[in-house]
Length: 111
Image 1: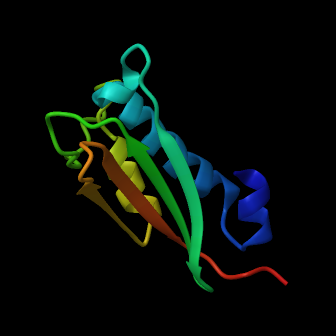
Image 2 (image 1 turned 180 degrees about the vertical axis):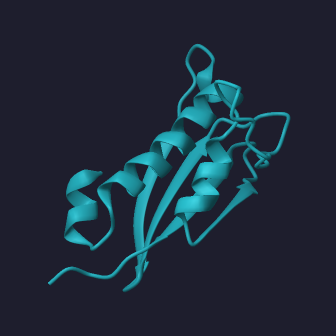
């Protein structure tokens, strides 16, 4: 991840924070965290100003929604953080029962 974000002018800290939150949420809140569960991480560059991170998980009964962070709690700020560091983010249910969540980080191709 760091190598790709250096190739593009994207903060490796922001890239790491967003990808870590998306992946850890998939493990914690979906069937990806169950024995035998899997997740797929996709890094894409859809245009000259965007680095897209996408996590495809095994699906869950609930849809991810950010909530107002409770700073006294140990967890619960993941999607709020993704919302803060990304230009945009979203989620989609896939036909096979899996779920995709993505975040677009602002970037530009490094010379």
